[in-house]
Image (cartoon, helix red, strand yellow):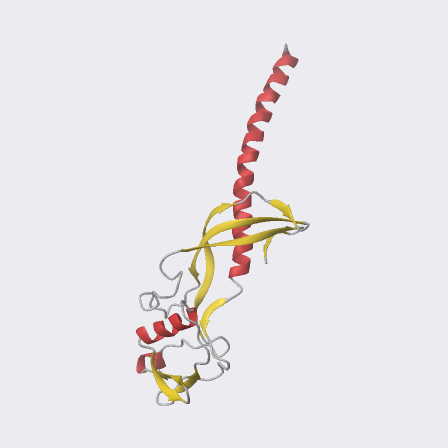
Length: 194
């Protein structure tokens, strides 16, 4: 009878362990997905950048920027520039230049006091970071690799203290999470975003 009880107890102990193991693996995948996506997103900051950023803004010495070809629609650089003007750090104006125009950037007194310009990257307002993993497809084989499509939301992280979020509200992810999708590939070192 002691042996039967032992077998019976083991049966009950194994089943709950199996159930909890199954539940935990989904959370692990979700965490692995977030880690892989953040590794990809954190490599690039959102910046207003010029061909050569190695200068200092000085009052009375405007910087002229050739507009070049500009596509219509949302442009994060334009939104950051709008935020710099809205916050009162720069005045932004247009000057005729042949058949087009140039953007003229002039630092304000307020902008002169705030260290918003990085001589390597320009004016950066943070980087994207996962806010929430919403859903993912069942991982499947394709082209010799295991992959999954993940739907997630992101918000800006690492926003510098000088940024007035109201002035930069046109920058996606500053106030509200943005939903998007990404494909992750399973490697010998975990999930990776291409």
